[in-house]
View 1: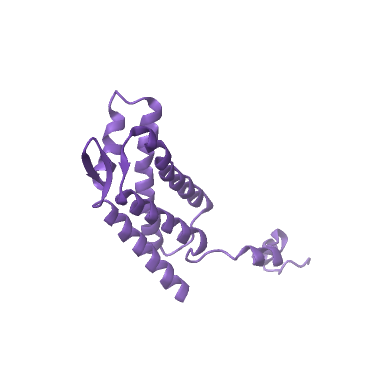
View 2 (view 1 turned 135 degrees about the vertical axis):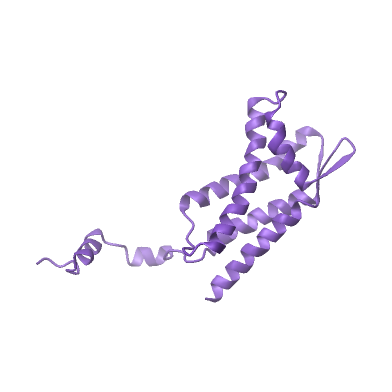
Length: 168
């Protein structure tokens, strides 16, 4: 029960940090400083413009997925009765965090400056990812338990039939 409270607190904290990142200065280019919300707006609107290549449009649009997943996954864990996160969602979350990290390398080409809002945004995503990977509410048995007591198809079939897996 204590673990569930800690996970809930960490998820709420990561959501609050994520929200705060939208109001912090996140990027500076051409003597202008942009807050996180403007960067999110940029990634939503600018890929639709014709001057972007296909690659740039896909790259910047993927930041919208990062933002949506950052809201969807923690909120769904806090609201839903079943608190298990599928392997698929965990893999997608890892890929999106790496996509956000990639901006550190690609931005070096653009001659702009990454500011504190970006790092706070990234930290909130990494914190959520760590909570999903290591502290998920209602997680399945750990790997040591699964190795020590592997599920048996025959045993579960017999239990479903009411025979306990024994031949009759």
